[in-house]
Image (tube, rainbow, N blue to C red; front, side):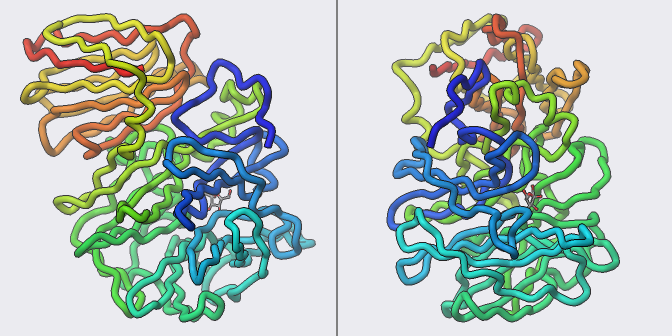
Length: 457
Ligand code: FRU
């Protein structure tokens, strides 16, 4: 597969990007016959949200990815306007992809078909066509099948959906053979009045608990929460053999506090880890159309792989351990300084900011664009950046439950993922600074609690 020749100054190294065109949701995440496969929503033709296929990359180490041919293309009657999001499972040495065929009929009305495609080698897929009927009581907004194997070799599928009363929902199906499916109803017993559509549902299982991850649309901003146009987050609880998710008494929590994060998907690998990739973007056409990489023929990336840990009733996200292999040589270490200006020799850096005990109020300025600030008195982390469309400063923030002890940054030419306190909170964002701005400026002078800063190139 040929990548656009000139990838431009905002090319990324830690992240999966499309060779050309537009990337959105991660799809079909799986480790199959020892190889990690990541599929993604891909418009090969241009940088708009039209004609989605499934792009495909594979890796044996989770950090070096090889491009594969597109796995699914929108060329059949049941997916002619897009092979939309879905998931993968492996069964009897075959790779099964479940996805949504998006169709506009002659009247330009939406139709959605939940489809199957099967592969023996993990590269070439044979489409089997639709496997479910449109459920009664729902609009044509039914999509994004996530399939997993439960107890007693039962197969389960959860679908993002919209009821005819225009509220969001998640629908559950059950199967013994991955071909014949029976609907068992809504995932949640109690109606959750939470937006007009739920996209990309996922169930992730830990020892005693599960989390239901989904991307609701139509939630109003409330203080520090839900400030992006669409959000992704989770409820914790238990999945029962009746196909129900019994939720804990805890509210929906956003997985990421940054500006660009949506439609995450998880999978379990052979080390038993629950790994997550998200789309580092949000569907907002005006903002997307102004992303500078469009001039170089491509747009968007996935997040880095993150390991999900369930602890104290919440999900923590840690950068996958393999990413450490991308560190070059010995790091630059700065300590005991209330003020410092660090030069960035390269634009692919991991930066760790550690405090001996806990942080005092503190500010880190990234390349004269992104500010990361910590207010010790309010125990609050705030991230601000310049909006590349309007030029305005914009802010996202969170009040922590424990005092700040560590910031961990994956910083690139146009992308930042910030992990706070070992992934208790995460902020993901794109930024497009001036090329010459090459410093990280530290200001901890009011506190007397200087951090140790470790910069890996
Ligand atoms: C989420 C989403 C999915 C859909 C896909 C289409 O970003 O809207 O619901 O399947 O993108 O690309």
